[in-house]
Image 1 (cartoon, rainbow, N blue to C red):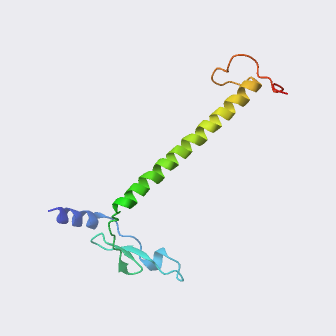
Image 2 (cartoon, rainbow, N blue to C red; image 1 turned 30 degrees about the vertical axis):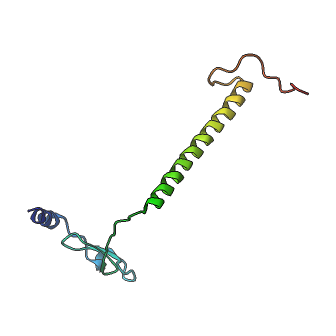
Image 3 (cartoon, helix red, strand yellow; image 1 turned 90 degrees about the horizontal axis):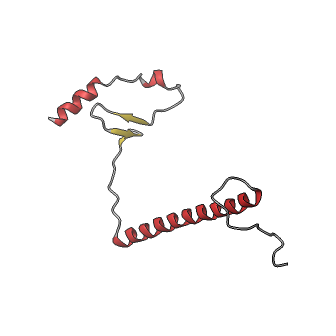
Length: 108
């Protein structure tokens, strides 16, 4: 039954213009879809495969993802602290500044 419903849906879909009308004469069409909904690339049906990772590849992928997340958070924290320090010195709006004045010449 699902095949019949799919077939009816495809038959109801509007037909596109012929290649002669849709493309300039010096352009060759590369992608197409037939009446059954199968995708064709350069006249050949497109085949897809499922990507299967080994256990080691999965572990490595998780470690890389965690490293990217940690790097992003580190960049965010560094940017926030730099802005906070600058905003406190300039009197701009930020979260409450630490107590006391900041002395640029301290320790000299």
